[in-house]
Image 1 (cartoon, rainbow, N blue to C red):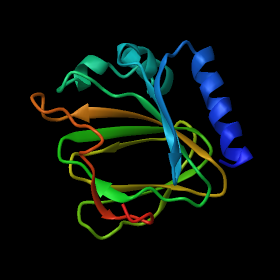
Image 2: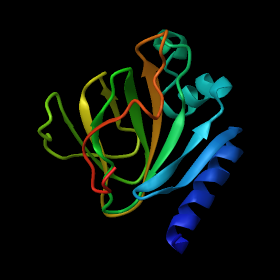
Image 3: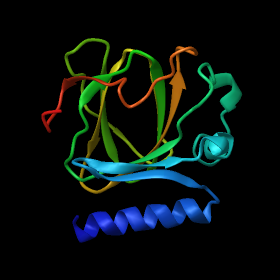
Image 4: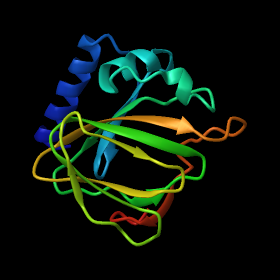
Amino acid sequence: MSAEKTEIFDKVGKMLETQGFTIAAKDETRPWGGFFVIDENQAQDFANQYFDGIDVESLKIGGKLSPKILLVAPEARLSWQYHHRRAEIWQVVEGTVGIKTSNTDEEGELKEYHPKDQIKLQQGERHRLIGLAGWGVVAEIWQHTDASHPSDEDDIVRVQDDFGR
């Protein structure tokens, strides 16, 4: 792992701990960067910190929100993807990121998002998060759309992926 990647993960990990969050899991192995998963019991605190206090109860169709912090490397692209059982809300924490969306398999135009910018992705909406000049840090919460079958990491339909997944 590069020194730069180690540094950004250490910085964000310390920031989350300082904010009082319990890190339930961490993945630094993704080819595009990685993520931190926050303890589900802290979903409202996470929403208060990163999503202007959005009421998590109003989002809880499937019982949990799977709060995460995504770290996207410069010039890296997550897969062009969508989900059958969740909608997502992203808010940029640090850096500038690119996001493409579309209701079809054809990628939409690249739009830049800056700290405090938020985007709501609907269930089935195609999307791609893209690192631009520097590292991007993005808060994410899931809105599970099927209470009897909550979304998980297997609920990713990759239309295109730079890493052959």
